[in-house]
Amino acid sequence: MTVKSWQTPNNLLLVMTVAMTIAFAVWMALLNNFVIEKAAFTGAEIGMLQSIREIPGFLAFTAVLVLLIIREQLFAYLSLALLGIGVAMAGYFPSVVGLYLTTFVMSVGFHYFETVKQSLALQWLSIDEAPKVLGQLIAAGSMASLVVYGFLILAQSQFGLTYKMIYVIGGVGCLGLTLFAWLAFPHFKSATPQRKNLLMRKRYWLYYALTFMGGARRQIFVVFAGFLMVEKFGYSVRDVATLYLINHLFNWAFAGRIGALVGRIGERRALTFEYCGLICVFTAYAFVDNAYWAAGLYVLDHLFYSLAIAIKTYFQKIADPADMASTAGVAFTINHIAAVVIPALFGLVWLVSPTAVFLMGTGMAAISLVLALNIPLNPTAGNEVVMGRVKAVAPAL
Image (cartoon, rainbow, N blue to C red; front, top):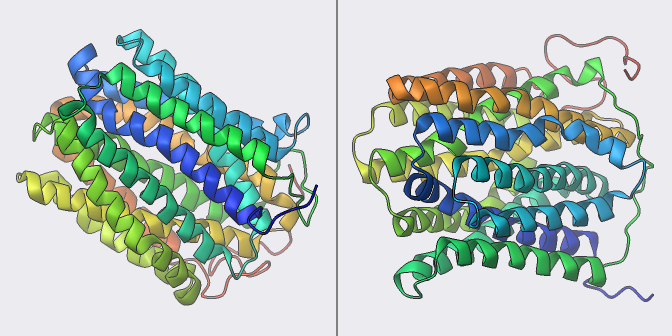
């Protein structure tokens, strides 16, 4: 088979990113309104649903076991297909139990795909190009989200589409692009054969810690910031879609530049800036009483999250190239340890005090800031941390 100029690993990553975004953006944008209108969810139920959504992420370490049977690229396609099926099914089960089940199916596909995508990206991209390309993938995902949210603004108000119909469109769109990727792109080989066993290395401890705190911090944005908009400020589906559209317009405009910026200023400075900003944002969430200010904080919060690619590029610089696939699964599991617990636990706290939830988010950002300051200005294998350096590379566990 003759490989054409556009059949590159970067373009495959782009197509798969867009496929994932179409399905997940539809699911995410409709979620809060759908569960409140159709299943009478409170903070407790939405917290439980989000905890269930994170369980497959917690089990992402099992991805390396699947790779004993199938190749990573095929695994990515199968995961995307499962994501599309889960989203397409969501509108047909408007009950607490039904939403829990469809969310789990969708989430298995989403988290396995994100695990494999991270591994493939760090294998296929050079250290020099990784920050810029990862930023471009975020920008591409945001462009896809802009299209999705623009459609959602019109879907109910102009086209009269039901939740069920919109979910099906999102799921089928993901499936169609996945089929295209499978048929249109060749199999790409990694320059370094990947280890197919579970492993953790002591010298990666700071990467694991940053990943853990990133999972904890992300829940404040993913679960409770959006829920705040609907419950406290009464946002409709159109309002939420408009907010997401603005959100991703900023991401589309700046994410690529943010990736290039990470490459120029380094991971330590990028993450320090992110966490200082998040301390301010979470504290402001706790006390905001104006719907427009809350929307501004939401957009700013999401823009700061683009800087989190610095955690991935930090790992790429310090890691053994053969560790990418195995560590991607382990990292996703670590990322989701807190993510499984926090939505349900903080959902109960939310019933008493939404302010307390966001102030706890401020504390998480402060811990992350301390960790980020331990990254060397020029991290490499053997120079992984400023303090707490492991003198010898530990064997794989």
